[in-house]
Image 1 (tube, helix red, strand yellow):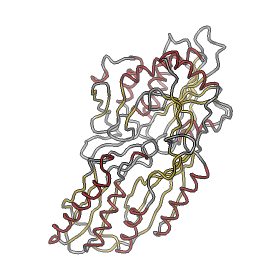
Image 2: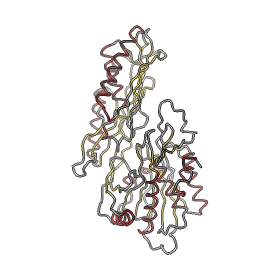
Image 3: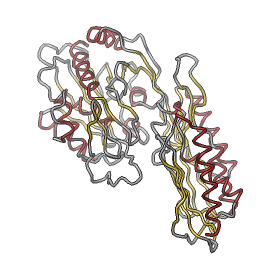
Image 4: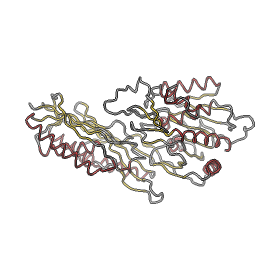
Length: 482
């Protein structure tokens, strides 16, 4: 057992979380995690269905005396977002997560923790092997590749599930029931650029780092800095003021994460080092003033780098940098119906320079399909004006809230009984697999709940230990009462 997890309650949940922390499970690389789930099901002698995508369905009979209860399913995703701080030595393909305890919180050492959705999956596995929970007939659904585009949910087949109730265990706020979510689409822009020999100047690396980042849906309204936008602003100032040549631009690492870090290699005569550093220092001060307490730890630095052989043609560099500066990013509209809920947003996520191709990845979200498509068209238009070609992919539907459904009423009654008050009903400005799978099962009633997880999709991710205990208590009670 990982020392940070030793003696924690509930033991049935932390036992499986301990195992998952040692299993590399980046999106699309969940094979080992899948084998772990299959091994648990085989050990328990349970029925298993596995589809071509790699999703797993496990069926468990009812506890004696509960055979007539409404069939329900517990669902979570096997993959995790793999983000690490610059300077952290960690290979997500081979290395276990280094879990650290900080009072009532668990976090990782310089990387994402994987509590999203590791805690939910662990709770489902704990229910799967339980003998003392008086539940009805259950199905367990473990999906793959949720984090990079809800692929497992999108490829999940209709007609497989028999449950009437869908309990998603991927919510991240204790005391809430999520009853709706936004849909999304990924918009990727590509431009073939002209490369030419670099001048005789020196190589310099401009780096943007220290930002909080976070989830591109649930954190998009927090006012946090976007490293790509900031780097674009610095490079634009440099191109306007100095004879700088741009060789490479890169930043961001996931389409559903706010970019925390970005960098560019530029070429400039060594005699102008002071001018470049002064320009960058001024830009850093300006951006820090703009972000204020929303993102106070921003840093922008200049350091010597190996001089590249090729640089972007000046016109291509100007167009690319200009697009980073003008690309829409952040909240586009708030919900007129749900106070505090973001209705439409877009995230400037990743830029890479691969040979003579610059690629920019963005994502748009909305609970309203027409609004989602309008946001994607807006981003595409800006990209085309800068000479980029556009590809839309990975579109997935939202999930319309049904606050008076039978399952919501039942879960509210249990919450009132256990905690003395009803749960807060929320809708999520993020994609949940409920919306994608639920679309294939009309009439299935859905709700999502879970423990408190803060800053998912970033190395600041942490889960509140006491909330996991409350989550487990609530989950068991729900299964015994529905």
